[in-house]
Amino acid sequence: MRSKVNPGVEPKAHSPRNHRTVHSESSRNVGLSPPLVSNGAGNYEGIQKSPNRPLRIMKFGGTSVADAACIQRVVEIIRAAARESDIVVVVSAMSGVTNKLIEAAVQSERGNRDAVARIFTELRKQHRAAVTALIESDTQRNSIGQQMEELFREGERFCEGTMLLHELTPRVRDAVSSLGERLSAPLLAAVLYESELPSQCVEATELVVTDSYHGGAEPWMDLTRERSIARLEPLIQQGVVPVVTGFIGATEDGVLTTLGRGGSDYSATVLGTALDADEVIIWTDVDGLLTADPRLVPDARLVSEISYREAAELAYFGAKVLHPKTLHPVMQQGIPLSIRNTFAPEKLGTKISAVGCANGGGVTALAAVTEAALITIGGPGLRGVQDVLGRTFATTTAVRADVLLISQSSSQNDICLVVSSLHAKRTLEALRHEFSHDLAHEKVEHMTLDATVAIVTVVGQQVRAMSRTSRIFGALGQENVDVIAIAHGASACNLSLVVARKDVKAALIAAHREFQLSELASAMFSVSDSGKPVSWAYESERTGSDAD
Ligand code: ADP
Ligand code: ASP
Ligand code: MG
Picture 1 (cartoon, rainbow, N blue to C red):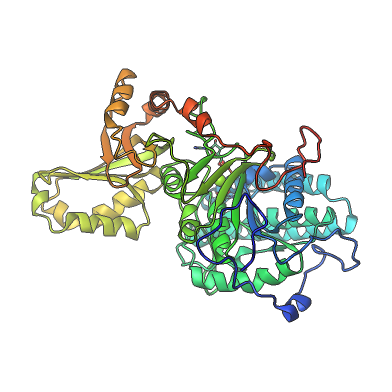
Picture 2 (cartoon, helix red, strand yellow; picture 1 turned 60 degrees about the vertical axis):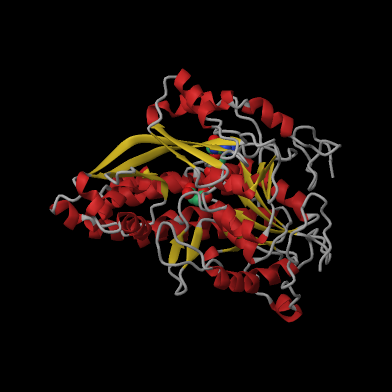
């Protein structure tokens, strides 16, 4: 069993990385594709390796690699961490790139050749500017430039095909939208190389094996574990930092898939679990998990510690800082997850673990799904329809629409369910198909969609037990916010309310004030004596001090 060198990392319930045996032959023979790794001339500082080094997965989001200056910061963070840990980096596309790629794919389907060309011109400009600013060596610059150009051409070919067919298939949509990560990962690996940190870009298609559900594929952990260990372990043993494309996976046959928007967080925890890492760190553009979305609640404060359960509820109910499935893999294995700020790396951020932080049964944070849709199935004949709930759930599962909330009237005349707006149309179509016979025979009288709602969720370790319902009703009432539906009880730690979308901000602000989250969050804040991050210290750009 490896001893921990990092006091900031909680011991896990299982034995850490006992499968990470040293494969001396394969380590020596590992193929390092030039020019992104050490040239063997020994001119690297190298990563100090010891048998006791913890393994950290560090994921950098789009804003963290938005431009050359941001990428330079990321390199410094990786360099500092690599002094004491083995590191696997997971990287998102540069900020805005995935949106642009999806737009290009959509415009291709519509036959808008000029719009597609414009988008690719912008993308080339954005990436070339970063290469020019960050890579000094001509050879390296040409090599990475060529690699990127091949990817742009690949994307353009996919768009050409889409234009010819007038059809954007889910598979092609994934192929195009994944290009952002396939561009940013080699770029970051090349910059690390320039900074004398041996590194190699690894495409997640080699590691993350998924089912074939394009646009929201689910990883298969056993195969993913096998492939990740086989591919990454030798690199780590050699002191090479793998830079893995987030967001992406592939079916067993090698067809590229994506894990859903914002999926790089999930990539990081999937890989962390596959490699039995000691910690996963999500590096982003805010100080950590906050008591509410700071764009909607300006008073939002940092939550310094939180339990997996609470964080999972917040992610599921719209806290964009974490992809909804991020917590699933790590909570099963007890791997700690941190959220930290790339632009203030000296701060501790949020630590997510099994225990979290007791706050006397109070509310920890709020989340909101601002784009939700309420589907109502109803009519007096509904009582006579066989297995309505079972069929409803089977239908939503088939179209992979998470039901955020469901309620059935006691007379069984109506069922209403709330799904994300993203899934609303296809859920309604699928339900209409499933109940078509009952609709035709007027057993189901109506099936309607209200696309103007939002869900506000209150999360705390014992929200249910402490019955926060009356307080939140009171607070929203004062702001004239009507509650359309409420779900209370499915989970001990959440309470969800459906409100009109126009009211979501007012509802969040009122609830934040009612539960005094600005004050409570700062009371929970626990910093080490020195005030420095407990896991390791960074050379803060702000103070210029070497805090190591
Ligand atoms: P990244 O590009 O690093 O993946 P995201 O934009 O996906 O970053 O997520 C970070 C953003 O999530 C923050 O800038 C913030 O606006 C938003 N956000 C929403 N809810 C929360 C919350 N509870 N805590 C922190 N950030 C939140
Ligand atoms: N680039 C992808 C997206 O924008 C994945 C991610 O950023 O996590 O959805
Ligand atoms: Mg994100």
